[in-house]
Image 1 (cartoon, rainbow, N blue to C red):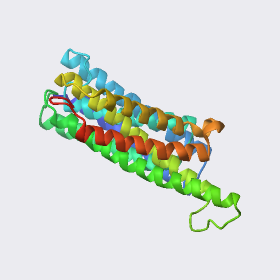
Image 2: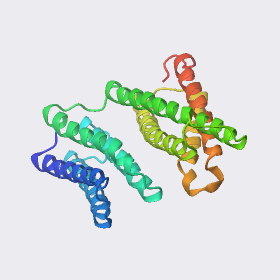
Image 3: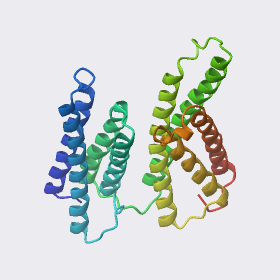
Image 4: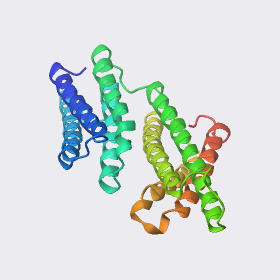
Length: 268
């Protein structure tokens, strides 16, 4: 169970993340360079404080294993999402990303503070991690469905524009591309968390899994990783990114089918 000092440091991390998220929203009305720098600084200090909690808690427990209980698990998940946001904002800035993911990060840290103090739940059973695995996997699939839809609309709109037809009902290519990239960004974060939690569950429970499931999941992750980096790689921008978004969703559906109908007895 975490001590009072660790809980206090955790709330410091929450305060930094909350301040950074608030500054990100305020930039809608006053987008200054100093406010942007302050927002990034708050995010980095929040991650540093969260890492400090994990290290302190590991020293107290006498083990470095990062998933020993719910307190560690929730902080790790929050930290992974925060790291993903920081990486994305550094390589391809997207202000709206903070508005969607930072509340999740803060909620996870608050959950760690509340449940870590009230009850110790060691990671020995499948309930917690399977719940997180399933939740992030299916929410990630939902985000990829949006990306596939907007990607298909982009392909249709681009084809109609080449034929000099009206695409007003589809929206502009720029708007469709932005929607696709936003959905892919959120879906990729959720998929990554789902893969990590699923792998941890299999390792701890000694479960087997279908090679097809692993292959399909790996292909989906790679495809969306390519789409995610499309803005910094002109080769995969526009129509190719849209096509990959549709293809990735088809493979995602194949993965879900493999999980439901292709799992061996005793596997995952």
